[in-house]
Length: 432
Image (cartoon, rainbow, N blue to C red):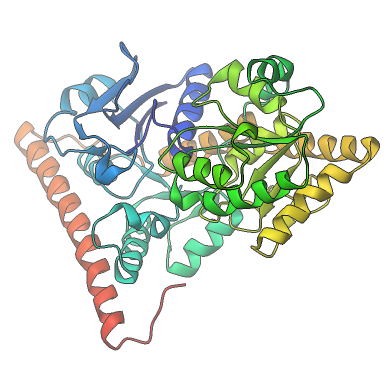
């Protein structure tokens, strides 16, 4: 199959969507499929990329680490004509997601949409953030899903939420799988030596994009409180983002600067080494749609301490492979960290073994099998018409399809806005 992926985030951006697109693309290519990735430009992006089309974009939109792709009519035409896609897969409902609809409609191709994100958790990046804007983005994403032929949900929690919100198109749960062989072994001792962390230290770790929606101020305060009672413990953070300075400030205020370690962005072997330098993985985000970094941590044999939330509860099983905490309080979280630290060696090994078993369930091989099967079903049930037409007739049909795509997009945007405004005035209907 020839699969075109359209995403608003991609390497070198650090985040779950970018990593998901990269992981699935690489796995599909290994199996003999072709994948064309359409993504915005980013600072320091790789040069001489193969099967990647970059769209001009506004960098670091509204002081974030996101790029906003600019609409460039016709820019993709030659690349798509050469690539001849069979499937169009959108990873966002806006910006390049709109382009995905136009491509699918114009070329009479099946459209798949992965609802990666709880978009209402990200409206603080947009000027004029408000409850109304949050409801608008929920409505827009719901309508976009209903314009697609197949929706991928990263977890059971998100599948159920989408259906409650009014998604009527087929929704299947397909998480971003973990590459087990990348994480099961690692040289944690090397990382500890490099960062001057002793072999005896108890290392609490975290991996991810360091941004406000990840609830990192809470995490920093909870880990700092734990470290105050454990003189040989430290906090190892892998990633970059706008919240890094806030984390440093929390530790500085507690006099713990020397026990806070940042590695920046790590890839491949270096990332695995960092995970193996940790004793447990701490996670406090409530905006996830799937626990991608959690399964990677578990593939490295790490028990996880996390807050109960969508995308997390499917991965973390309380007292089996870590602690799943129902209450968001500093005391509860530090107690969870303490529970792991207090476990005897035999019990700790059982937690690690359970973590590895969980990671195997979420392997990339399993999730890619499921996604490719969905693609095949779509191709078998959405076969374009092969009736002979003149060149003029074909041009007219294509033009009508393009107009229909623009009309569907316009209806989706204006309909979402109208529904939200009506809710604000007097409608009793509320989206969950």
